Image (cartoon, rainbow, N blue to C red; front, side, top):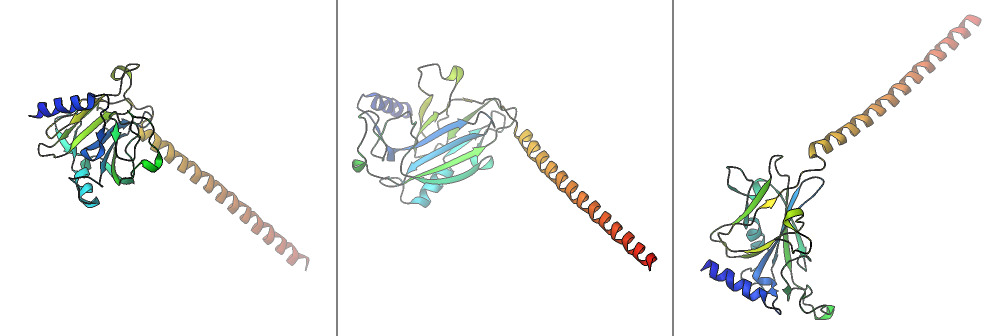
Length: 241
């Protein structure tokens, strides 16, 4: 049945006039910062006109428990909350680089061109952003939807490079159903190690502290010299009497 549904989605989305209605899907966008190596997964869900979501609180619960992640070791899949820091953002549109044309969500319908602003219906969209730093020895990661998940997830690798994305090739993406595992995501090597950044920042603080101490010491020396001059003048004045 699952593969039958997947086949149906592919045929549906493959039609020239097809566009996914936003309330039917969660849009999951994965990327990695080239400098720090931090990874980010944003999950966007439409609240208004969604038959499966009644309010924002329910949307928060769905997004927080939606996906699990594998770090490529023997620990298997773990909740994102065990590794990542979460933040929420209220939007009126989905990520602009979605690989699936979206209609009826305040976003331009990619198949039909520009939609006039007055004709666009604004929707309430909640986005959960997970950010975390992979372990230094991690080379890839995968995501997993629980078997009882009722959401359809459009998942894509937003900044795929190299062998994963040849010139002219679309970004890797897929539709995930309950019990599905994502394709593997290759992790990039960090250009700057996070610990190095922290060490540089700490060194800057130490340098500032050193300069502050030098200024304080100089001021103390000047004060002592002034006191010495004052005492010597006072003694000379006493002798003259």
